[in-house]
Amino acid sequence: ATSIAKPWRGEIYLHDDAYPHPVLGHELVHALAAPHARGPFRIAGDLGGWFPIPGLVEGIAVAGSPRDDNLSADEWSAAMRRIEVLPRLESLFSLSFFEGASATSYTAAGSFVAWVRREHGAEVVSRWYGGASLPALTGRDWASLEQAWWAYLDTQTLSPAALAGAEARFDRPGVFGRRCPHVVDATFATAAADLASGDVDAAVEGYRRVLDLDPGSHSAKVGLANCYDRREDHRSQTEILTDLAGDPAMTEAVRMYAEELLGDLALREGRIDEARERYQKVLAVETNESRLRTLDIKLRYADDPLARHALVTLLSGDDGQCPYHEGALDEIGLWRAAAPNDGLPDYLFARQHLGRRHFALAARRLDGMAPVDVPRARAEAHRMRLVAACALGDVPAAEQALATYRAHPLVTASRADYYAALLARCRR
Image 1: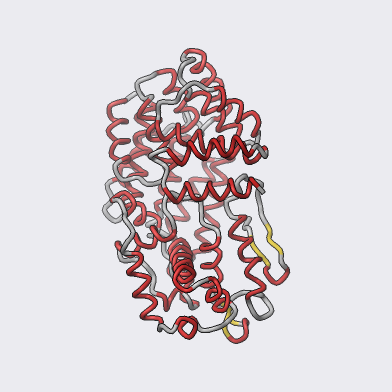
Image 2: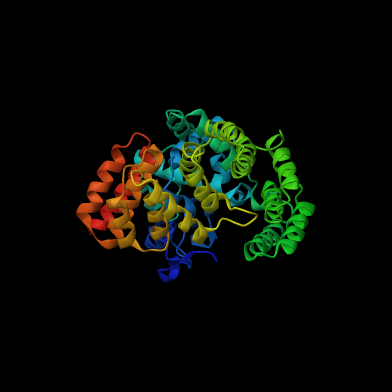
């Protein structure tokens, strides 16, 4: 299901109750921008609003509601410029918007709209959204605006890992640049659902159909590897993942994802040195906060049999099964009893509570847990405590959690700003 806005009716439609909701702010901006627009749909458009400008419609939503992400839209756009995939403005603010990957187009449009607001003010953005010409409003032609935006992007400081992450995030072609994209996506979704329901044979057939249509689909290859894992055919699983990890046609991020899955298999089978080597290789180029944290945890506890078994069951699955949360909780409980001075088991329990919206239970676990010596997990515990406090309306606890979270050296400015905005909403 897709979350959407209907600006002409002042309505938004959401399809889950996550907290904080990942797209609520984005959809709200669409609705809130409606009074500034013309035409029957109340969105940015030419010819009196009848001919939409998708880059401006989505750009204002991205600019107005930044994501919970390690990098900002500006930083991601700067990374796109460095790796030479940043879209030109002439394509962003025309129907060519759809020719690029959605992640690329949305992010770049959001960065540019935010830059226009900083440079020329909210009134200019409002009038542009309402149909006025941006060059006329700013006194600068599109080429001049683009050069100035690029100059701003060039001031962003980026790590090698951020550039590697950009190559992974922005390598997917747009809808108009893929062969049978809707058929491929629907077939892939069906195969994934079959695997999740335990129908491995149907999943294998589905992933193979995807590869017939799109031979380069790394997602389908990983899906097949997961099917072989469920069948306990680790030889076939290893062959697919090894091919992916060594395929120069794949992005570095895809190769590293395959490396991590090979590391997980090695960890499960007790080949600790191999698992460590693979995890360290991935860690050197990864930018996704969740994956970095998971890698840190797996590396920290690789030599602890009790912790390792609990983590394998929770994160990677065990004995040919998919990740098994209920079984893992028993293992985590045994781990906690054996290591009462280690806060990681309670941290994992708190994550389960938070995911199920049991905010009070999560808060109690986090408040009572022993120290956690994995730095990224420690930072995440403060973030989780902030979320739980905001959900419970406990402003003092939320303020304390945010202060601690922001002070952590591994928390990026983009993520700290996102949660500062959450606290601001919590105070209202």
